Length: 183
Image 1 (tube, rainbow, N blue to C red):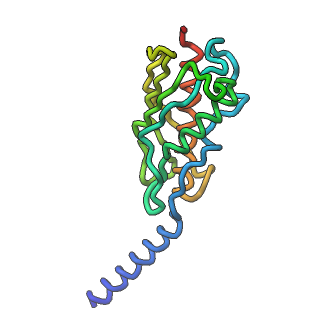
Image 2: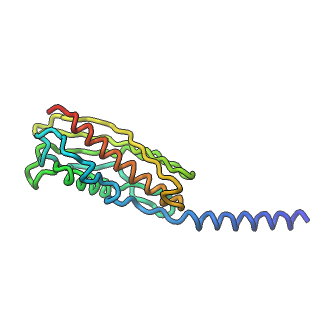
Image 3: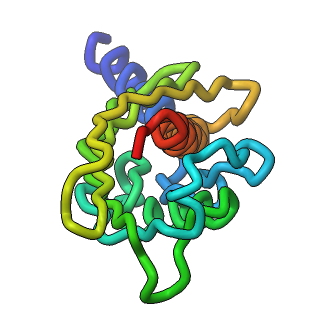
């Protein structure tokens, strides 16, 4: 009798695990177009010296997404989002005329593995230099975004949305620091 109850329990547990796996889906990488700051949000209150004078020199620290685990943000996707945002804000320099190179280090993503509301905090170090190599801005920003069940029912999709929102918020926070920079 105990063996049959144990067998039923194991069968129920297996069905439950399969149902959870089916609902969870596969992790997908962040979409750079969803991480970029929109042109309307990237107003032009930047110091005049930064207009069409900045370029991304390096982006490091990102991770590629493993479809069997959690959504992550790659260096390439972060760089694409940042370049798109800088283009929208009128900050990107023409090829060969960069006066303010930017180095970015994605220090990490603080993200839940399960939950209804997925809050992700991205930790990013931004460094902006002048042509002589002197630092103009050195900032480590911790920016958060929460995706809820109303944003997406599937947990891995919510996590990806939270990653994208956190990076978008980080870029916006970086722009705020640039606007306040004294050059």
